[in-house]
Length: 176
Ligand SMILES: [Zn+2]
Image (cartoon, rainbow, N blue to C red):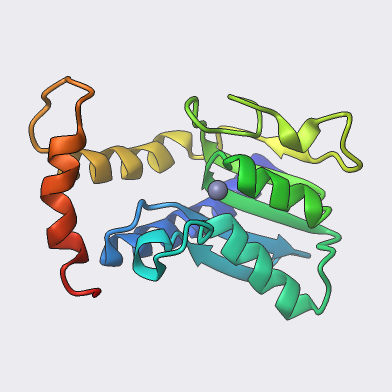
């Protein structure tokens, strides 16, 4: 598929990522495409659903499987704004997804080439075609803006516990 086509779908994933901002979730978006049309799209809902597995990729893959009536996502491509983590890369393999396209790399947690490469692991029974860096700058910028807005003081220290504790009651206030 052409770079232009990849950009069109990644732009869609990016729009989906921004929807996560409405509920203060890390802005990551995912779109499943087959045959030139969107099968499913989703954004990160970990905070709003209090669900450690509610990553954009997993939600999009589940919705796509429901829509297609099959757990096997033959002929589908997953577009995601951030390199998938170990869980999501595992889900991509389980869905037998032929193609994964991601925007920004995640050097700290990425499992599609950065920290691990589960999607191209020769010991597993399925390998995925990977396209990286599509709209990487835009995808990364959304994340940077989100994290900067949560940490107004560039303290530069890693003892972020105080800052986290201070913001938690405000964000969780209405949930309980
Ligand atoms: Zn994930």
